[in-house]
Length: 319
Image (cartoon, rainbow, N blue to C red):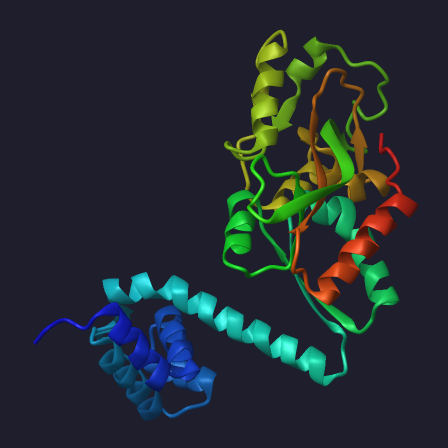
């Protein structure tokens, strides 16, 4: 028997595939149990088993191995899971879009925001936009760097609020909104918080929290640390979680180099303090990345609002 071509397999999935197949696949892989999957989906165990058998027949590949405690995904299943997750996510987003229109809305804006853009721009702008345009639904996801560009390439997003990219995606343009720079920060209760002039030697004696290697800010930290009389100690937890980073910074006497826009909300409410450390570099500005032509009406309304909002309510300079 000749192997099925990719085109034939696609046509078969389009004709006979169901979203329920995808849901069952993902839950079985996550829970490892037919019984628990049936409880979550609201089906009988027999229906879950039949759904899996139908999907395996469509794909002509075994997706799960049975064992004493349940099921285990095969290598083929593991390779399929990322695409299945994206498929179900797109279905959920489609439901939101349809619901927004059924409720007589004026459209949906699919947006990605970087962490710095969310903290430095969107936490202020999005509530104001919702007040001004309550019939436009904004769907915000957080993503950085390559994940932003990948979403643009896949057509999964209408606008991106982010740091100016080093390479512009074809057919897109960037409008700067706020300048950014590196700042040294600590909690308000830190012994250095009220010191007006801090020597390099004193900075070298402090313990520093650092962001993960590979980030632009981490590179600036490494350069800054090398310029001090001695290399300062690094706190032994390096976290990709901003929640953990902020918690440590608020609870411990640590210093951190960070993009000032990322720390803006906590600088403005007094939880963090910017230290008087001269010579720290500027960063690429934050702004909105959008299509040159063909932008949807709701996305165009949001873009115009955001640029006007930042012009009318410029950020204060936290220190």
